[in-house]
Length: 305
Length: 254
Image (cartoon, rainbow over all chains, first blue to last red; front, side):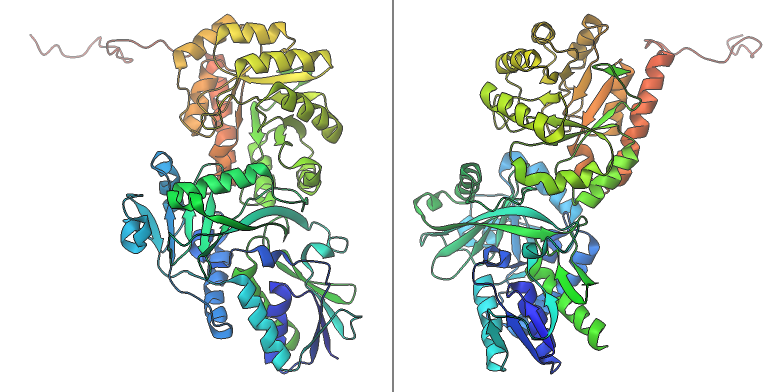
C-alpha cells in the first residue's frame, strides 16, 4: 500500500480521488467516532462572495473548484448566489458590493420568485454554484470504492497523509478551531433554487436549499474549540434571519442542528505540511469544499511531479 | 498618560473582533502601534484559548471586555472569568440595553461598576455622554470614562459633539476615551482635537478593505489630533482675515 489517507472528510476524499486518478495505490482510514466538519458544511461554491473577507487566492482557487466538483459529482447546481439585506442594513449590502467582484445589482424577486416584493435590491453572483455536501462526499466515497480503494478503521499500512482536521491539533502547531453552528429545517411553502445570503452587521447567515423541501442554515463563526450543541443564541439569531427572508418559514419543521469545529491556521488559508515523515493537509477553515480540490491537485503535483 | 496608574504612550485602544484572519489582526495591531487590545470572552468562553494565545504573541496589554452581556449578573460573572483567563484586574464594562441599538444600559453599568470596583477590578465603563451617569460611575469606583461617539459599529463619528465637549470640560482631570462609533480617521482626529484622551476602535479597521493600512491611518490621525489639541486650535471667525498685510498694495478705489 503506497498511501494511507487519514480522515474521510472533504479533504481526505479529494486527496484520495486525485491520487486515485493518477493510478496511485491508496487506502482511507476512518475514525468512526469523529464526524468530519465538512458534514456540517453549507456546500456553497461561492468564491466571489467569500472574497468579502477572504484573500484573492481563495477567490482564484475557488473558481477552479467549481469545475472540479462538476466533473466529479452529479449534484452541482450552477444557479448563482443571491445576497440581500433587510432595508435598515442596506449599508451592509453596499459594503459587500464594494468588497467583492463578479456581481450585478438585481431585483431579487426577478431571480428567485419567492423573494418577490420582499427585498427591493440585492446582489446576484451568477457564476457561483452549490452542492449538497453530504451527497457529494458519499458520491466521492462510492466512486473510490468502485475503483478498489479500501475504507477501514484499522492501522494505516502506507505513507501517511493526515487529513483529520481538528484531530491533528496535537501535531500541528498554530492550528485552531473556529466553531460553526448550523441547522436544517423542512418547509414546502417556499421554494428557492439557489443559496441566499442575508447580511447583518453581527449575524450574517446563509440559507442553502437541499432536496425534498429541506434547507440548511449556517453558520456562526466563534473563535472557540467548543463543539458542544448549538447555543440558544445561535438558534434564535439564525431562525430570526430565516424568518426575515420569508415569514412562511415560521411554520417550518426543524430537522437537525449541528456544531462543527473548522480547522484553521492563523491566516485562515489551508496548507500542505511535511513533518515527521508524514504529510498533513489541513486548515480548510470555512472553505473545505471551495479549496480542497485545488489543494488535492497541488498535492499530487508536489509528490508525483 | 495614565490609566489606573499605568503609563501609556499610544492613545489608540484596539478591538480584536471581525478581522479576516488572526494573521491580519496581528499585523493591524502592530501597524496601529496600540498598547492595549480589547478581547471578548462571553461567547468564546474557555474554548477560545487558541485565538487568545495567538494574539498574546503581540505582547500587548489585554483589556478583556464584557461584550454581549445584558445584565449585571452576566457582566460580573464574565469579568470574574476574564480576570482568571487574562490575569488582569482591568475590565471593559459593557452592558447592552438593547440588542439592536447596542446602547449601554446606564443603570446596570453603574451597579456592576460598583460591584466590580469593590472586588478590586479596574473598570473601563462604556457609557454615554450623560454627565450624571458619568458622575455615578466615578462615585462607584471608576477612574476613567468611555463615552460613545455613536452607536457601536455605526461609523457615524461624534454624533453629539456639543455634548461631548461639555463632558470634556466637566470631567477635566478624568481620562476620557471615546469608545465606539468612530468610522474614519477624520472623526478620530476631531475627537482628539477637542481634548479626548484616547480612542477605542474596532469595526472601522477590522471591516475596511485593508485593515493593516487602516490601522496605520488611525494611528497617525490620533497622533495628529493630539498634537493639534496641545498646539491649541484657532477660533473660527465669521469673516475672512487676510494673513498677508494689505499695506503698500495699490488702492483701486482711487
